[in-house]
Image (cartoon, rainbow, N blue to C red; front, top):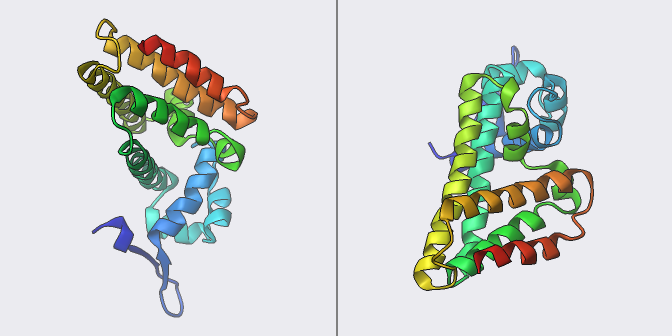
Length: 205
């Protein structure tokens, strides 16, 4: 069943079952995980944000780990949808890469920036996560890098990016810049973000 049509039912010991909107409670939990990270997010923190008791969370998701998995999957889906919608309006590989970096910069400012990126934050915690969670995060990072590689190759084919450029190496650099903006945005304003994008785009010439 699609998550858009899904609801979360938590049965009370007495009275009628309460029904919750799945996307709504996942989005509220997402804010907590983004701000605090996986390990620092307690069930009490999550329950307060989701307006659910600890018992209700356990009934609905079994444990914090399962809740995190659901939240992580939703975060990836939402971010990918937003990014691809923005990129479809740009005609070549180079302009799409520049807009991708702008997308990360826009996500690194004000309230959104202070909440942080769930992928970047989870990457920092990678060594403390179990194998399944670690692999989930690694695959998310790898998909980001592979997507950048595909945009570079696209730009080389359409002539907007130098054909002499090593796509894998350049993609790694771009990913570091994109993730770096999210890290900086967590603690301060990314005041030189536009200049950073302009500088890194010169690598593609």
